[in-house]
Picture 1 (cartoon, one colour):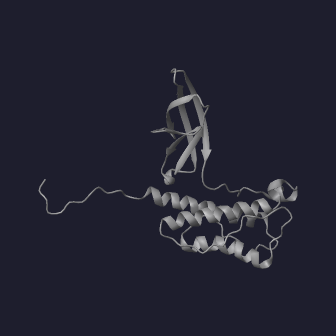
Picture 2 (spheres, rainbow, N blue to C red):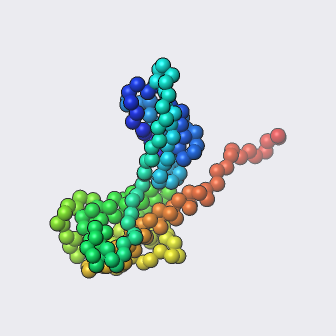
Length: 201
Protein backbone atom coordinates (compact mmCIF):
# COMPACT_ATOMS: atom_id res chain seq x y z
CA UNK A 1 0.00 0.00 0.00
CA UNK A 2 1.06 3.57 -0.63
CA UNK A 3 1.63 6.26 1.98
CA UNK A 4 1.84 9.93 1.09
CA UNK A 5 2.91 12.99 3.04
CA UNK A 6 2.15 16.48 1.67
CA UNK A 7 5.06 18.89 2.18
CA UNK A 8 5.80 22.50 1.16
CA UNK A 9 6.39 22.92 -2.56
CA UNK A 10 10.02 24.01 -2.07
CA UNK A 11 10.97 20.61 -0.61
CA UNK A 12 12.99 18.74 -3.23
CA UNK A 13 14.26 15.64 -1.43
CA UNK A 14 13.45 13.66 1.69
CA UNK A 15 15.14 10.93 3.68
CA UNK A 16 12.95 9.15 6.14
CA UNK A 17 11.59 6.15 7.95
CA UNK A 18 8.24 4.45 8.50
CA UNK A 19 7.95 2.78 11.90
CA UNK A 20 11.74 2.97 12.20
CA UNK A 21 12.53 1.40 8.80
CA UNK A 22 14.27 3.43 6.11
CA UNK A 23 12.07 3.82 3.03
CA UNK A 24 12.56 5.25 -0.46
CA UNK A 25 10.40 8.30 -1.14
CA UNK A 26 9.27 9.74 -4.47
CA UNK A 27 7.93 13.22 -5.07
CA UNK A 28 4.65 13.24 -6.98
CA UNK A 29 2.85 16.55 -7.19
CA UNK A 30 2.91 18.24 -3.81
CA UNK A 31 3.48 15.08 -1.77
CA UNK A 32 6.13 12.45 -1.14
CA UNK A 33 5.09 8.83 -1.56
CA UNK A 34 6.41 5.46 -0.45
CA UNK A 35 5.12 1.88 -0.41
CA UNK A 36 4.83 -0.35 2.65
CA UNK A 37 3.52 -3.90 3.14
CA UNK A 38 -0.21 -3.90 3.92
CA UNK A 39 0.45 -6.45 6.66
CA UNK A 40 2.71 -3.99 8.44
CA UNK A 41 0.01 -2.76 10.78
CA UNK A 42 -2.51 0.06 10.89
CA UNK A 43 -0.52 2.93 12.42
CA UNK A 44 2.48 4.36 10.60
CA UNK A 45 4.87 6.74 12.34
CA UNK A 46 6.75 8.71 9.71
CA UNK A 47 9.95 10.64 10.37
CA UNK A 48 11.28 12.75 7.49
CA UNK A 49 14.34 14.92 7.01
CA UNK A 50 13.34 17.21 4.15
CA UNK A 51 15.62 19.43 2.07
CA UNK A 52 15.11 22.16 -0.51
CA UNK A 53 17.35 22.66 -3.54
CA UNK A 54 19.66 24.92 -1.54
CA UNK A 55 20.24 22.12 0.98
CA UNK A 56 18.28 23.70 3.80
CA UNK A 57 16.80 20.98 5.96
CA UNK A 58 13.77 20.56 8.18
CA UNK A 59 12.43 17.63 10.17
CA UNK A 60 8.83 16.46 9.88
CA UNK A 61 6.89 13.88 11.87
CA UNK A 62 3.55 12.43 10.82
CA UNK A 63 1.30 9.66 12.06
CA UNK A 64 -0.97 8.00 9.50
CA UNK A 65 -3.69 5.50 10.32
CA UNK A 66 -4.81 2.86 7.85
CA UNK A 67 -7.50 0.25 8.17
CA UNK A 68 -10.33 0.28 10.66
CA UNK A 69 -11.22 2.28 13.72
CA UNK A 70 -13.57 0.54 16.12
CA UNK A 71 -15.14 1.33 19.49
CA UNK A 72 -15.53 -1.43 22.04
CA UNK A 73 -14.87 0.30 25.35
CA UNK A 74 -18.40 1.55 26.03
CA UNK A 75 -19.47 1.38 29.67
CA UNK A 76 -22.74 1.20 31.56
CA UNK A 77 -22.17 4.80 32.60
CA UNK A 78 -21.92 5.88 28.94
CA UNK A 79 -25.41 4.52 28.33
CA UNK A 80 -26.90 5.64 31.65
CA UNK A 81 -25.57 9.21 31.45
CA UNK A 82 -26.28 9.67 27.76
CA UNK A 83 -22.67 10.13 26.74
CA UNK A 84 -21.85 10.06 22.99
CA UNK A 85 -20.65 6.46 23.15
CA UNK A 86 -23.85 5.53 24.95
CA UNK A 87 -25.97 6.09 21.83
CA UNK A 88 -26.00 3.82 18.79
CA UNK A 89 -26.61 5.95 15.74
CA UNK A 90 -25.78 6.47 12.06
CA UNK A 91 -22.06 7.03 12.69
CA UNK A 92 -21.83 3.64 14.43
CA UNK A 93 -23.72 1.89 11.63
CA UNK A 94 -21.48 3.49 9.00
CA UNK A 95 -18.27 2.75 10.93
CA UNK A 96 -19.16 -0.92 11.32
CA UNK A 97 -20.28 -1.16 7.69
CA UNK A 98 -16.98 0.31 6.49
CA UNK A 99 -14.99 -2.03 8.75
CA UNK A 100 -16.92 -5.07 7.49
CA UNK A 101 -16.26 -4.07 3.88
CA UNK A 102 -12.57 -3.45 4.57
CA UNK A 103 -12.13 -6.82 6.28
CA UNK A 104 -14.04 -8.68 3.58
CA UNK A 105 -11.86 -7.13 0.86
CA UNK A 106 -8.69 -7.91 2.78
CA UNK A 107 -9.79 -11.49 3.46
CA UNK A 108 -10.52 -11.94 -0.24
CA UNK A 109 -6.90 -11.10 -1.01
CA UNK A 110 -5.89 -14.06 1.18
CA UNK A 111 -8.36 -16.48 -0.38
CA UNK A 112 -11.37 -16.10 1.92
CA UNK A 113 -14.73 -15.19 0.39
CA UNK A 114 -17.38 -13.55 2.57
CA UNK A 115 -20.83 -12.51 1.35
CA UNK A 116 -21.36 -9.20 3.16
CA UNK A 117 -23.79 -6.71 1.58
CA UNK A 118 -22.67 -3.59 3.43
CA UNK A 119 -24.21 -0.16 3.76
CA UNK A 120 -22.31 3.00 4.72
CA UNK A 121 -24.77 5.75 3.81
CA UNK A 122 -26.74 6.00 7.06
CA UNK A 123 -27.67 9.56 8.03
CA UNK A 124 -28.80 10.96 11.41
CA UNK A 125 -32.35 9.92 12.12
CA UNK A 126 -32.19 6.67 10.15
CA UNK A 127 -33.45 3.58 11.94
CA UNK A 128 -32.54 0.10 10.78
CA UNK A 129 -35.51 -2.05 9.83
CA UNK A 130 -35.73 -5.60 11.15
CA UNK A 131 -34.40 -6.92 7.82
CA UNK A 132 -31.56 -4.37 7.76
CA UNK A 133 -30.65 -5.40 11.31
CA UNK A 134 -30.48 -9.04 10.24
CA UNK A 135 -28.13 -8.15 7.38
CA UNK A 136 -26.06 -5.81 9.57
CA UNK A 137 -25.34 -8.45 12.23
CA UNK A 138 -25.28 -11.24 9.67
CA UNK A 139 -22.25 -9.58 8.05
CA UNK A 140 -20.32 -9.77 11.33
CA UNK A 141 -21.25 -13.41 11.87
CA UNK A 142 -20.32 -14.18 8.25
CA UNK A 143 -16.80 -12.80 8.72
CA UNK A 144 -16.39 -14.91 11.85
CA UNK A 145 -17.65 -17.96 9.95
CA UNK A 146 -15.19 -17.65 7.07
CA UNK A 147 -12.18 -16.73 9.24
CA UNK A 148 -11.76 -16.76 13.01
CA UNK A 149 -11.74 -14.77 16.23
CA UNK A 150 -9.90 -15.14 19.52
CA UNK A 151 -10.97 -17.44 22.38
CA UNK A 152 -11.64 -14.28 24.39
CA UNK A 153 -13.85 -12.66 21.75
CA UNK A 154 -17.37 -12.06 23.12
CA UNK A 155 -20.09 -13.42 20.80
CA UNK A 156 -21.91 -10.67 18.87
CA UNK A 157 -25.63 -10.40 19.57
CA UNK A 158 -28.14 -12.22 17.40
CA UNK A 159 -30.42 -9.19 17.02
CA UNK A 160 -29.95 -5.44 16.85
CA UNK A 161 -33.31 -4.84 18.55
CA UNK A 162 -32.82 -3.10 21.90
CA UNK A 163 -29.05 -3.29 21.45
CA UNK A 164 -27.21 -2.99 24.77
CA UNK A 165 -23.88 -1.30 25.27
CA UNK A 166 -22.37 -4.76 25.84
CA UNK A 167 -23.78 -5.94 22.52
CA UNK A 168 -22.47 -2.86 20.73
CA UNK A 169 -19.03 -3.53 22.19
CA UNK A 170 -19.20 -7.20 21.16
CA UNK A 171 -19.93 -6.31 17.52
CA UNK A 172 -16.90 -4.08 17.14
CA UNK A 173 -14.65 -6.19 19.36
CA UNK A 174 -15.32 -9.16 17.05
CA UNK A 175 -14.28 -7.13 14.01
CA UNK A 176 -11.17 -5.89 15.79
CA UNK A 177 -10.23 -9.44 16.79
CA UNK A 178 -10.73 -10.68 13.23
CA UNK A 179 -8.31 -8.01 12.06
CA UNK A 180 -5.87 -9.00 14.80
CA UNK A 181 -6.06 -12.66 13.76
CA UNK A 182 -5.39 -11.64 10.16
CA UNK A 183 -2.32 -9.73 11.31
CA UNK A 184 -1.08 -12.79 13.23
CA UNK A 185 -1.64 -14.90 10.13
CA UNK A 186 0.45 -12.62 7.93
CA UNK A 187 3.26 -12.62 10.50
CA UNK A 188 3.43 -16.42 10.28
CA UNK A 189 3.97 -16.48 6.54
CA UNK A 190 7.30 -18.06 5.51
CA UNK A 191 9.05 -16.66 2.52
CA UNK A 192 11.16 -19.16 0.58
CA UNK A 193 13.89 -18.60 -1.91
CA UNK A 194 14.09 -20.28 -5.29
CA UNK A 195 14.35 -24.05 -5.15
CA UNK A 196 16.86 -25.95 -7.26
CA UNK A 197 16.69 -29.62 -8.12
CA UNK A 198 19.36 -31.81 -9.70
CA UNK A 199 22.00 -29.14 -9.89
CA UNK A 200 25.52 -29.15 -8.61
CA UNK A 201 26.56 -26.42 -6.22
